[in-house]
Length: 66
Image (cartoon, rainbow, N blue to C red; front, side, top):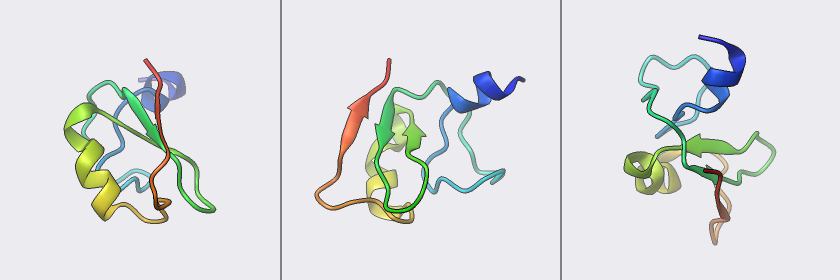
């Protein structure tokens, strides 16, 4: 898998680098975070990422990326 493919896959719900729990499904949303790279997630992990990921802004800023 290339870096480009990895960037387009879901990083939810926690958004850590290289975390074995990464989903791998195509990311559809990008969640803005404070002092961290935006978190790209699939529809299934959008809700959990808002509650569990580090640095998520409140109110959340969510962008549709695909």
